Length: 145
Figure (cartoon, rainbow, N blue to C red):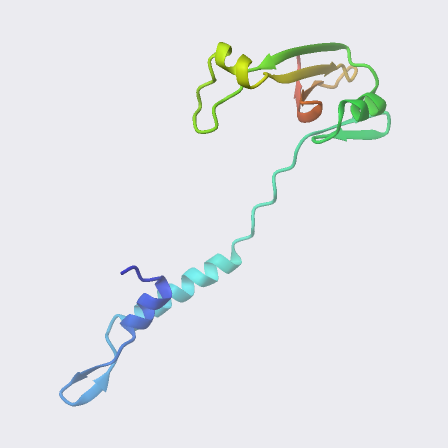
């Protein structure tokens, strides 16, 4: 039988008879103090801020993950370079890609596009990656990766 911390504490608090008088077990105070400290520490630890995705500022607009190609093109204009390829399709319960001849029969490859934006002197280049026509990620670097 598995006990939760509260049910363990309740079990330790049980009273027993010794010589006809009722008394507490000696560990009860220590367990309750430790439980109180754990609950207090949990309440005082600030929650980690949610991870924020990168966005691309251009022409007074902001392109971010989830935007369509058309939206990014409208906000940022034509990229310096474009590249596209088919990414392998992975099995649902594994990390190995399907063999190409099997994937071609059942599942088409996942279309990936990468657009490179040169943001001018003093700024890093931005690579916008699209998966199925939607921004998947935006990565900043000195040169294309």
